[in-house]
Image (cartoon, helix red, strand yellow):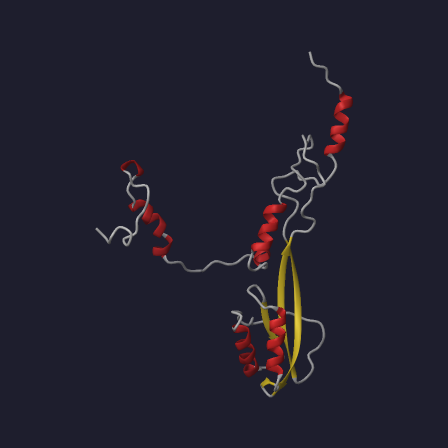
Length: 210
């Protein structure tokens, strides 16, 4: 006959209450997106960039290590179409198109200049990893303190555009019915597994259509 001692249970309750509490299926640690705007003011000559400013912009973009996920916009306060074409040619070399609208930045734009704004977002999961809660039988219905850090940390590191974590990416308003049903038609056309048809072979692999 076993004897239950409440004195032995007290230390376990105290230990289980220490550390980060994760009481649900969704982790308390979620990706946090941070936005930074970087600006460069360039001199203009008429509707184009002043001599030497294009080279200065090219060096700045290279130092910024422009990449997918960055957004570039022009704030000129006027219709600088020629300058926009020059700047668009430089950003196009990185595979980035100019945004239609520039974000609000600090400071006024001096006459005879325009402002190039690079908006960059980064995603991180603060306070991860977290090993503050020692793994043991937990009577408070909490998972480990590090629960969710691995999955959400990898998501924040791998996502190409962190802005998608905030507002998502809208789908195409139109769709091709043939493309949408291609997988279903291939599955239905395959021979049943009971008849030995476990794989779907293409025409090229099977020597052409039969």
